[in-house]
Length: 130
Image (cartoon, rainbow, N blue to C red):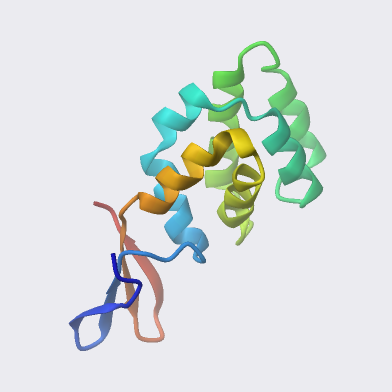
């Protein structure tokens, strides 16, 4: 797969690979959510996100209510991040997952996940759901 943009029109770029973008990562996590919820215990990821000020003390408290249900805790964490206004929430989530050696399979899956993104000249980023 090429990391170079493909021009699909005069003012739109189609990009299939861009891990640097929070919006692209957000879409990738959304596409993989079901698998993530069933396979990831979010305890250490929550600690990292708290340390990086992505989630706050109130968020940690509400997530700890699901101590005996890691799948529900993971689902709640992802929901918090999707609702978050933090512009780096999914970049930080990816960083947290990448730091966990036992989740290497997930970072590989995220890296291989295809998404289509359109950049409109000076109009920001618009993610096309595919």
